[in-house]
Length: 79
Image (tube, rainbow, N blue to C red):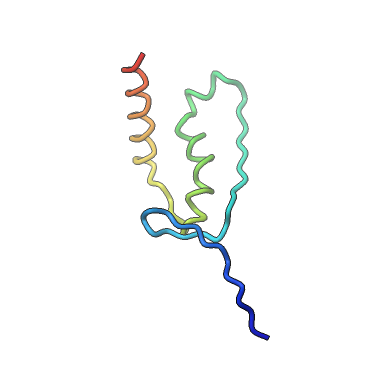
């Protein structure tokens, strides 16, 4: 028996592919004050599974830190 089933493929602009349409992630946060001190680790934990479903891509730590620092800098300038 032949099947014409074609799984849905999700692509990024850079050509990375995934057949999953969702990722479920949870992280534990002890208190709101710990978010700032642990921001890099929290963002890494939250986004890693999403990036990994696209061809097991892993955002380098220095890229994550640079992007978050840039966001914080721009936010500080706009106040």
